[in-house]
Structure formats: structure tokens, C-alpha cells
Amino acid sequence: NLKDGMVWGLFPLFFLAHGLGVERIGVLKAVYPACWGILQIITGPMSDRIGRRGLVVWGLWLQAAALALTAVTGSFAWWLSASALLGIGTAMVYPTLIAAISDAAHPAMRARALSVYRFWRDIGYAVGALSSGLIADFFGFEAAILAIAILALLSGAVFAILGREED
Image 1 (cartoon, rainbow, N blue to C red):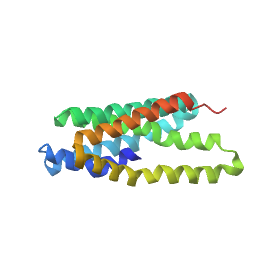
Image 2: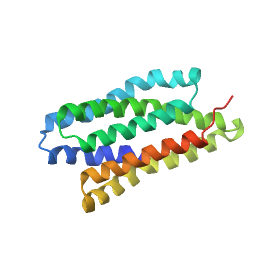
Image 3: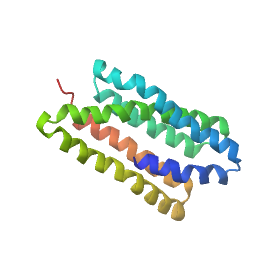
């Protein structure tokens, strides 16, 4: 959720600095959660059928690509596409990762495992907002967005290497 903390706090300022008005910023901000919310209805059950690892890995990599696309382009059309891709990537990861935690935990420990996972996941909102804000202050908006993109890319690589499918 480093990404979400950054997206909610930094993106409006980034788009404003590039000359967008409130209406266009609102459209860009709406596309991401709309894609995520609608598509996770499909990706959650899909992960039960095709497995979780691939959806998490490719979803994180798609998020990284969408963030990089946002940082390196400068037009509404590109940012709209990147917002949709970010939503698709998040829809792949969000319901699937919590299911993977549940799969890996023994039933007697499942509630504890999920609470620990949610604690670390949700602390990412604050850490993402604060860290991306600090990076943006020192190095600019693009650097902050690219830093979070790199973290998403690396997270996908770690899950590709260490993640496993449960039976």
C-alpha cells in the first residue's frame, strides 16, 4: 500500500503541477479505483482457479509499469491509460495476496496471520504518503513516483522467487 499512499497524496499535486484542472484530475483519480474495484470481482475467484503467484507477480509488475508510465509521460491520455493499468494491476494483487496469506496459514493461526498481514499492509498507506512526499520534496514528483514503481517491481521479483502456490 505504499503505492496507494503515494497515489492518493501525490498524484493530485503531480497532475496539478502539470496544468490539469480539478475535473481532469478527478477523472484520473476515479479511473484507478473503478478499475480495481470492478475487476477484483473477477481476479479474486480467478486466483482460486489459476493460482495466486502469477497474479500477484504480474499485478505488481503491471503496477510498476503504470507508475513509471505516469512519471515519464506528460499528457492526459497517457495518464488515463496508466490509471487504468494501475487499477488492473491492483485488482490482480489486492484480493489475491490476502487469499495467499490465508492459504499459507494453518487454520488455527489464520486469524493471527491475517491480522499481522493487514497491519503491515495498512501501515504502507502512511509510509507511502510520507516517504513519497519526502522524496518529492527533495527530488521532484517524478523521482517519487519512480521510487515507488521500483519498489513494486522489486516486490514482484521477490514474490516470483520466494512465493509459492499452496495445494
